[in-house]
Every structure is written in C-alpha cells, then in structure tokens.
Length: 314
Image 1 (cartoon, rainbow, N blue to C red):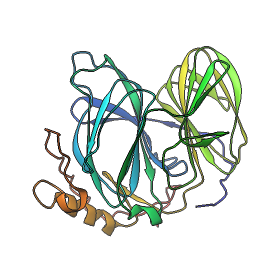
Image 2: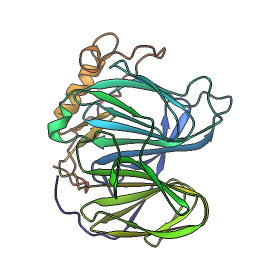
Image 3: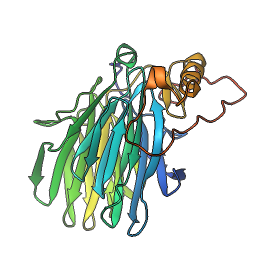
Image 4: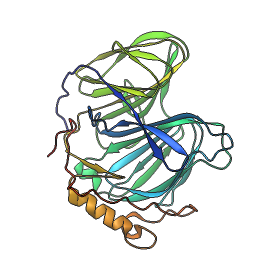
C-alpha cells in the first residue's frame, strides 16, 4: 500500500448479470477487465431493485471465504446473516454488516420468510492485506452510521472516513465507502482525498459524474489524484462512492477466496471440501441454517495467476 494513484481518464465499467443462488441475479461491476480494484475494493455486486413479494428473495446457502471482508449494504429489504462464529443478524436499510474472513469463515445469507416487497442493495468485498489475511475471523453489525445532510443530498459514511465523519467499521487499509442519496435534482462538487483512487456506482436514478452520464447499475472509475468531483443528478437518485489508497499486492481471486497464489486457492478449496459437513476444521459450521453448504466448483485446468490492480499477471 501507499503508491500514489495515477491520474487517468474516467473509465465506465458496465456490469454483467450473474445468478446468485436460485432466486437472485446480480450485476457484477468489479472485478472488470478494465479495472480490477478501487483501493482494496476488489468485488462489487449490485442487486435489485427487485419485487420479491410472494418470492423467497435472496437464498445463499453456507459457503466459505478467506482473505477478504464482506460488506452488505441495503437500500430496500432485509437479509438474515448467519456465520460459523455463531453470529446471527438481520440487516435492514441504513445498517452495515461487515464480516472479516481472516484465514477462514463460512456464512449464509437469506431473505427472512416475512419480508418487505422490495430488495435492493450491494454486496462488496475488501481485499485484506498480507498482515491481516491470516488472522482471526470477526463479524460486526453497525445499526447507526455517521451521516449529514448537505442541501438535498444525504451523505452516509459506511466504511472509512469522509471529511470529518468516520465509520466505526474496522478495516485494514485506507478506504472509503459512502452512500449519497439525492432527494431532488441538484449539482454539486465533492471534496476528495487525492491520495485515493475513486469510483462512483449509480444504484438508482440518473447522474452525470465527471462529465460522464451514468444509468443505474453502472460504475465509473475516476482514478486518483483528484481533490474534487463534479456530480449532477436529474432527480431523486442513490449513488455509492468507493475509494481507497491503491492496493499494491497482486491477488488471486477465485470463487469465494482471495489469495496470493494458485496454491493458496487449491489449499482453501481442498479444506472447504474436506469433512462432513464441508470445511469444518478451517471454516467452521453455520448453525441454524437449514440449507446444506455449497460445494466448490472444479478448479480450472490451468494454474491461476496473481494479478495486480491493473490486471497484469505476476
């Protein structure tokens, strides 16, 4: 960490649809062939807004993670989290679930049987640096986060620090995750940390960011070295600002694991698939979830290569 971010032209990162469990489809925005990371943010899924009235909603059985933190953020709906630490937490809009996998953890995520009609939110991963990725797992739930009203814009700091507001969430690298909710059409300028690289995700509404028109479900990477960012919205809109110091450690990302080498991934997969139920020794058991654990997919026939934030192999 600590490399100065390069100033680059903005890069639009359109998402592609990926099924998540049997009932939910997400738009995957990171990693992308044009940009693998924004700071330590290495994975971004945007789901909804979906009508889940009379439907199960999100149903993701127990599965493992290592080398990362998961961030769950909702605009609509409810998600019930269970993990192998014994955590059991239903998250609602405006609240944060942050799970740190460390060396290994398993968890499940389900929409409760009694739930609102709408489902809309983000699932994000943060890559853990080398000194943290072998550590113990932990789970945090934050029911209240710092926010302020700037005219027609409500800014909520989910992760890290923005201006004089700091999230209570525990992270391991300089990061920013903030929601920007607009009640009406407005044009304004955000002050940014030029040591960070940034991206803006549009969850709903229409926005123009740094001169680029954006539709819902798109992510604009605006690079680093900026101390200001111009944003215009045509009406009510919800944006999510991502930022962080450039992450200099090349990563291997495969399935639900973030490692540093092919052998890291092979070992994690084998340890998840070992035992009955899966992964008991390294990843633990998710109690209280009726669904059986997910089996890992087969590894590719070629060795997985570590890639840096630019996508270059190492």
